[in-house]
Length: 613
Image (cartoon, rainbow, N blue to C red; front, side, top):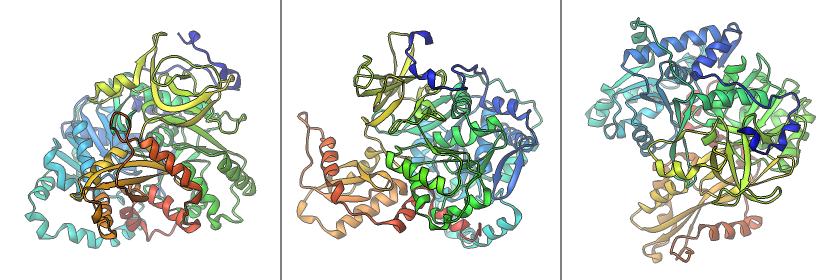
């Protein structure tokens, strides 16, 4: 069937294979198979706590037995609400080993967001980082969750760091023991369902039955959350084939990854980019995932100096911040052999700036850009090793085909003409969980008999098959690689008793690339005041994750409308684009703070602040 599709990009492949053979088994089985070739390699490094592949597989088996011991069965959903810690990735592969589905939740999600994710996936078992428990306490009765396994950030830290971690959290431990908490019915219910990670693993040691790993390639392995084509959060169903194909294609197409390479895993495991590129692909080729549960832009130079990673994967904001960090001055970065940018658009200017910066620091590589969506397991298009074209996001992966069609149709446009990017291949999702309407709109069978993913993104393909990203048709905002859903923010703002309606759009931002701005129409415009605006902000900050907070708010008497009465958000977008040149932003220090806000969280920074890297 592939012969019926034009693929002019193949002539730029070099030594990469055009087609790969994908196994019909689980993501865990792929890792188990490849790990057998390098059992003594270091699988992951968590603040100096290193585990070989042999040890990692043993940890996965222990957690898999523990899952079986608490009653998890084939195709059951286990939600994992964790940052990048060993327990997070152990839990993911343990679920996969027993045929359970891992639903990956952002731990900084607001309580109502967590509730929605748990209910969308019909979760009965939850593995969560400890600082999320206060939020989970408030919504647990509104879900089907019957068991919560709590994990501390310090669980797998080396002994000296664990002591520091414990010392800085004594006050939080005492708070959790406050008798007042036990007077709260919701807290009591959550507490009665909760066990620690250590107790969880201990239960697994008592499970002596054989674990059958019969998971097949086309079965659902994970649920990740994305905005889909409408910008409303949806659960993306990814199969074992999707995950395995992504790992194999990434390794093949990036073409410079090597056995034992150290990869800095900054991108989070609840993000397709982090899970597929920084974890599954690395574990596939025998590299080391350097796990970082939090990121501090101001001390990033210490992380680089300490671990000397070979591969750096991040969003454009990270690379911009690196060029602004004077602590990198005079630092030799000759150990960096591969730099991957994704999650957001990399401007031509930033690429040139960062490449010059790399050359200045003796790094024998340049930054390469990729493109993808959660709906196709993150990356599916990437800049060839030695063939960069300004403004291009590269060429498609092996067995993956791109074409540009007229918006809302299946009609392919000529090379050089703008249209909607559509994708087909083995990494394309199985669909959205419990949402046939959106699935049908996004996954469409074309006349060639293939299922094509309609991305909702605008692009151009040149005659050689190089793809150029032009913008997003859907309303979802990508800010420093994170998905922000305007509808979620609007729903919160509209719940304020003084608000009649609101509209949230993405506005150009010098560091985040795009950020959220809220336009608000009050029920009584005469009540506009700084005090009222502050109360609206407080409502937003209470109910939404920090990275999704609008950077600007503006009161309006009315919002522009389309002929059918809908809010014409494109008019607002155009107005803001015209203002961009006059908008003033804070400079270098604010840049570092913004990057830190987007890739970390206050709870983790507080817990780890005494770690002298």
